[in-house]
Amino acid sequence: MVLRVQEAINEQVNNELSSSYSYLAMSAFCESQNFRGCAKWFRMQSEEETGHAMKLFDFLIARGANVTLDAISRPAPTYKSIAQAFETALKQEIEVSRQIDHLYELAFREKAFSAMAELNWFLTEQVEEERQVREIVAKFNLVKNDAAALLEIDKELGARSAEAK
Ligand SMILES: [Fe+2]
Ligand SMILES: [Fe+2]
Image 1: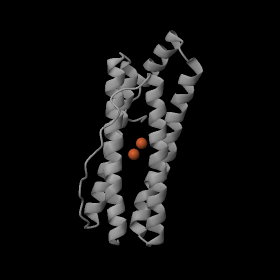
Image 2: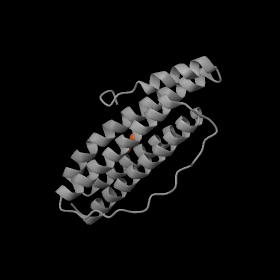
Image 3: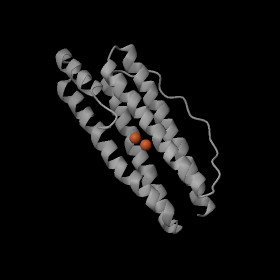
């Protein structure tokens, strides 16, 4: 695997950890608003992103590449609303999809076939990640400020389990 591809995947390790950190900040925000279900959802999402980073980390190690960790930028500490936190999450997922597309394109151009196989999993995962968050954003748009409905969404998101993702 050429160095350019290794470095780009290394960069994605950092991007996934940034996502994780950002979701953790969203979780803390939801906790502060007593939306404990949403907080749990974001916390699990944060753990998932760490898992993505580790998947790429392990791939680089397996290929004999060096892993260099970079600084993670400071996530927004607060949001206008819970709904806005999810809107930010959706933007973040769309951005990650773009990053994965770029990575895949680079791997393709450089004929890094093992990297393409590894990234295939991420391409599929991003479709699912975007779909999930888009669905939640749509629900928040639908209920607006209806307190009972918001509590219902919180309950539903809090029921997220590790297997169901
Ligand atoms: Fe991810
Ligand atoms: Fe994600």
